[in-house]
Each structure stands twice: as structure tokens, then as C-alpha cells.
Length: 338
Image (cartoon, rainbow, N blue to C red; front, side, top):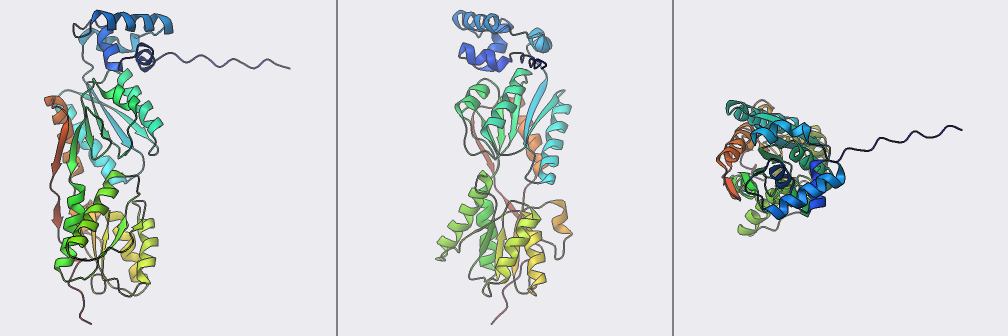
């Protein structure tokens, strides 16, 4: 019988030192480069934790010598739409590059607080000068708060931490103006294909839809939940096609709207002759589908660039919400007279 090979011991990280010393990762970084902003007692605890864990910080030597890494961290969700991910990344990289910064990207596979914590710890260990979070995580853990407390952070319609600056489209307003557009055309009811309930954007767009209907004295029908994909829109579109009274649908994303349109057509329902449809995002394909899609515009590239600008300005915590705008095309029309 051969003896099992011992797994090599993982090297302690800056986050491990921070936990042991009871401080943030950024405080550890400051203590190790003798920043005057760290009081002697805190520095003593950090150095004791470094010695106890055997932490080696040569991977951050450039940060320690200069006080800056000239790197911005970006946290992205792997799912949720290729177009939005690529546009946000392009905006962040362009703005960061113009300012002389590199971008370190951490991608998480799913909405999970543990994965989020590890991604933020990884970026903190690299000594990034700021973090852009483009993950719509609703719950925020104390560990996330601790990691980002001393690191300038901007979230794009995503995770809210006490010290973060929130930048993005007013998603509740997006749901309201999409719904109001359909009501203004004369539709007496608006159905909704929503995004996943664990997404902040999905909840806010649904709230805007519900509030708009309530203000018009209309009881909202039950929302049909999708997962942002055309396939989920198609499946919910098949359900909607079997309800004769459906004349208007607000889909929480353009991709789901595409799926709804296909399902309705397969069941003999024309768009917008029988059913009008509004989406959200205004991705490049929205103007070229058949019919061209009426949608609430979101400029992901500009949001990514604006997030970097906020980080570099050193803005404090708070919300910066941009009013949504509607791109009216050919997928919406007044309902047919009975």
C-alpha cells in the first residue's frame, strides 16, 4: 500500500492576514507599506498576524513600493447576457487604459456570496486601487463589507455595500416607462416576463411594472419568470400565446422578448398586430429583429466607463441613477378593435 501524497499547504493570502488581525485587506496593505494612516496598535496586530501565518507579500511588491498598483478590479457574472458583459468590460478597459490603469477581471459562475467573497479577496490581495462590481447580488455579507471598506468601489446596478457608490439606470423607472408606453397605446392590460427573482434589476423592473398598472387602476396578472435567455422567453411566450386576452407584453430583457415573439408567431399571433412587445437593454440586435423591437435603452459601455471615472474621482458612497429612455420601434402598436 502506497502512502497518500500530502496535498501542498495553501499559501496564506492578504485576506487571511486581515481576518486574523481583525482588519480589512486594504488596511493590511497600508500597514505593510508603513502608511501613516494606520495607527501603531493596528500595525502591530497586522505584523503579528503576518508572522503567525507566515504570509509572504512579494507578489505585491510593486504595490508596497509605490503605494498604488495602477490596477482596477472588475467583478463580472459569467451568465446574464454576453452583450452586457462584453460592453461593460470594454467600457471599463477603455476608460482605465486612457487613465493609465490596467484591469484585473474576476468572473463568478453564478450568484453566490461565497464566490463573490473569494473574487473580492483575490482583487484585494492584488492591491487593486478600486473595484467595479457588475454582479446583481442582492444579499451582501459582512465579509464583503470588510473587504471593500477601504477600497473605492462602484457597483453597476448590483451588490450594495455600505461604502460603495452605486451607478446605473433607474430600473424601476425602466419598468414603469415600458408599461406606460403600452397603456398609452390603448392596451387595457400588460403582461410581464420577468428576470430571475434573485437579480436586483429583475425585482426593480417588476416593481415598476406593478406600480404603473396600480396607478392606472389595473390589477397586475401573475408575472412569468424567465432567466434572461431567448429560450426562457420562448417558453413563457408559449404560455402567453394560449391566453386569448393578451395584447401587450413587457419582457425584462431584449433576449427574452425575441423568444416571446417567436413563440407567439408559431401560434399564429402576429407582432404587433395581435400582441405588442417591449424589451429592456436595446442591444444591437434589437433594431434588426423582425419587427424591430421597442425597448428601454441601457448603455453598458458608457456605464463601465463612468464607473471608472467615479473611482478615479474618489467619490464617496451614494447612488447615481440615470433615467431610462425608450427607443420606440415597430413591435408596439395600438390594440386591434374588437
